[in-house]
Structures are given as structure tokens and as C-alpha cells.
Image (cartoon, rainbow, N blue to C red):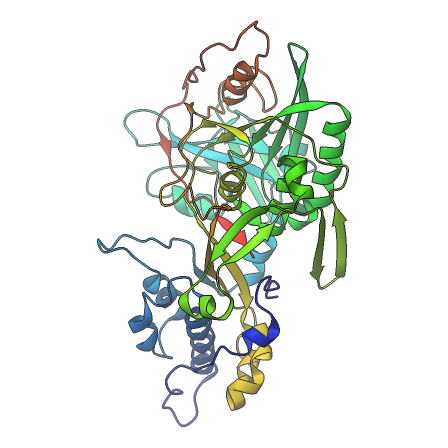
Length: 479
């Protein structure tokens, strides 16, 4: 399903002229595969031409797009690059199995409910280990007793190496019906995958910092289903007189802009919310800017979500916590909607960043199903509207806009937010998330005055693990 366009009215959308790509395959009787490729290319080319943030910059590539090209690789090849050839856009992607991506964004998928980081086992870099960072409530991993800091040395009997770790990480550790894990202590556990909702509100706590109440929220994804939970949680924090908040976003790769706005309305000063002050601004490509101009999003207390189940209304009235300072725990896995939330709150709040540099995804994307696109533009496509019969399963996540704060400033562009207090995430430090001695949380609590008359200088973690191997983090902000 195409997520609703928030700023462009249907009448404005109708002004976008469709120009189906090139000609159909020359074969007098094209095969099913040829027709599928033709219609997928037509969908992807036109969607990028109309909505892509850098459509002007890649105009020549769009004009030269052939309908018989391999479409997934074509989209990747066309993503905008700077003058040195480095990718500026690392996120636009065409999916043949769009449902898997869509469900993952919404936290609903078949999985083991397991998150981890990869490290070399020693300085020879010949072997790799996976270290558990957290598990989701009710997941097979949680039920099997896996916890933060557990070290996995083998997956289905295979040692992880530089040659196979990417395949194993993307495949056996992330999907399938079952997986057998061998741990550093020699024990083995077999997990059976399950269809589950990975609840992004991982845990909450309230700490007493010399009489001051400091809340803690570890949040892993801005899902639409978590909106009401966030509202209930913030009302609870308010009722328990929390005045400062530690927001742990170190593993949060983003999610829906709407959920981000809901949370922002409960963190920003209440008088600004009541006044409807501007939270964010948005910039599009030249075609959309000509139609609608730069758009702004006001702070408000009333929200609605409309999807295949109907319309759901939310209100954050009575849920504004009234915090005076926000401590944000971040690292390279903090991306997109997480970065946007922080960027947009900077003009309104005292924000302290703890951890590592964030991902640096400064744009929002649209999720567009190919079948929905053919239905939406059927009148303009004419005979090519039959393409909906050949593109089932395909969809595009396309970068659509650059987000900014009320003043048009995008603090995380181009290379992410820099922490005020650098500290390394250390899942093997011996402490679970939420424990006041856990490496990153301990720094935030020290700064908040926990356990001492005055905040001690922020310390770095013990860095007990060898060299980390960067994984491709999810990064999305869905409009």
C-alpha cells in the first residue's frame, strides 16, 4: 500500500504528468518475464521521475532508462551521487518482495526476535562472533533465554568468517524456520522462528537522581502500532513527576514520521504545542516544490492514522511530560526518524547526545506498491494500466524529501549527529539494558546526577570487545 501523501492534495497529484518509459519489448509475443520487467521498469522510472528528491540531478539517467533493464540494479545505479562519485542516497531501493520490507518497517515479521553486533574474535581477523545486544519480549530468542552479551560462535554448525558472515547474517540469523546457535561456553540452542510483533518499547525505568525523577525509555522503532503505547507511557512519566528523560535510540533505525511527531508533541515544551509552533519543515524536488512549496509540520495534540483497517484517532492531551532536558543515547544505528526527532527538538529542548556519531540519513521516503501505482494512474496510463497484473509483489522505497527543523536546518546532514559525550556501546560489559552500570546508560545517569552529589566526568566504556564489523543498519523515515 502507498502510505498516504501528507502534504499533496489529490488535485495537486493529478498535475504530475506520467510518461511511461520507452517502448515495449520488441518480441511479437513477449514472455511473462519480459512483460514483468517492462511494467516494473515503467513503474520505477515514473515514480522516481515524479517523487525522487534528486530527480533533477539524475534527469539524464531517467531519460535514458530502458524498459528491458534489470530493474533492481538500475534503481541502485541511478541513486544520486556527489561530484566524487560517492553515494549521497544510500536508501532508495526497489524490492521484488515488498511485503517483507513493509512488514519489517511495521515491526511485524517472522523472526527469532534477536538483535546482535558482529566482532572479530581476535587480531588475526580470521573468525567472527555475533554478540547479542537485545531480544524482543515474547520472541523465540527471549523464550530460549538468550540475553544481551551472549556470544555466538557458530550458526548451524558453521564458524563465522570474513567469507561467509554477510550471507549468514542476512540469511540464517535473520530468517528461515529454525537455527541452531553455538555459544562461547560450548552450549547450543535451537530457535524456531515465529510470526510476531517486535514491540519497539523495549523497556522503561525511572531513576531517582538526588530527588529528581529521570525517566528512561529504550525505543527501537517508530512503528504506527506503538503510538498509543507511547502516549500511555508519557502520561505515566508525567504522573510520576519525571522532569528529565533518557531516550535510548542506539538501535533505532527510524520508522514513521507520524509516530515521531506524536512523541515530539509529548517532549517539546507544552506551551509550544498549545501554540501550534512549527516542529519541522520539508523540502522536495523542483516539480513538487512548484506545486506545493516547502511544507511545515506544526506541533499538535491530535493525530489520525488511516490504513486498510480504517481510521484510528490519537490524542496526546495530558501526556506532555514537561521535561527540561533530554539525554539521547545514540550511535551509528540511530537513523532517519530518530535523527529527525532530535534535529527537530533542538530549537525547543536542552539535548545532550551520548554515544557515537549517528547514521546521517537526512531524508524521508515513500513506500509505493507497484500495483497501487498502476491503479492510481490507470486513466493516464491507458493500455499500460494492465501492468498491475504483472507487478504483484514489487514496490519501491523512494527518497522523497529532506527534513529540517523549524528554521530549515538539518543538523544530521550529511554525516550524522556528533555526540557531546563519546562512549562505545559494549554489549559484553556484563550488564543488561536498563542497568545503571551498563556502559552507555551509566554516562547519561552520571550527567543527570545519579548516585553522586555532582555529575562525574562522562567516562568511556571498558571496550571489552575486539574490533566491530559494521553491518548495514536499517534507516527509514516513512511519510
